[in-house]
Length: 384
Image (cartoon, rainbow, N blue to C red; front, side, top):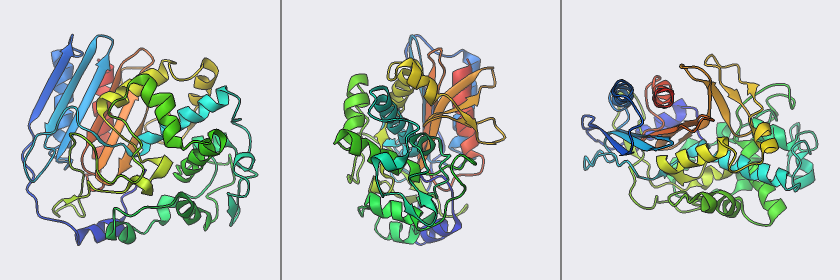
């Protein structure tokens, strides 16, 4: 969800930071069944993991790569800077905007069932909800919500970090989050540009609820989590703790400041734009099933993979809750990234069946290279 590091947030966090000494990174790899990587490629992955937990500043990181005959998990650094406990290979964490592919998949399943039309206006499903300051649900389609071409302001831009951090376990109502966005004019007219907006996914979650009569959390569980056997994946609602084994989540208020532990957080601040909890193994399983057609009929999967350029230098293109990037070894991979206080995640899958997901337990506060190194870790794992 939260993808920009703002000076105000870091300044406020500076008053909350607690002293902690970050142990040196220890790197390990565990292979289940036949190994995924050659010695050379495994060495390359280990080197990127080392950078994430030393030069890039994260206390710990974990990456899992899955392939037809098994999986390999790489870990580096620590899960807890106080105890020095090593990063677990199977621990849970907050996935931030990697929630978006789950939400988009449910919407597209409803499209396949003819209960939602991609090019219908938001007004059909949420009459009167999107209004004010030039924002108009009668002119914005469901497709545009999912593809970030609606022009709706991003509510995250108008959150006051001081209020969030004063009481990180407070509940946030989705209507209040939506109002933060609609109190401001659109970024552009619908279809006239591309700009990442978490607001669109608040509305996508509301559409799921209006159409099905169930919460989007219930629909994600029924349609994705249970069928795929994602035992460590959940939509937590107001639960402020992460169940089961997990790393602590940290922020760093300034480059030389100590870390702040923000593991306990009410994820309703993210709602359908980024509140879920999962593991690298479950995310790999989900992304692999998605891109290989196990969750959507062919027509709807093609719609999801129908991308538009985001004008980024690395060739990123965005579909419907799923983005593509070129692989350095040729071809494309499909996935998403996620940022939320304490955790940063990137995952991808190829249509040939290989998947890789990496998590670092620091966000915000990593170096400028952190995001690029996380993509490098995924791409290196996918390329061999």
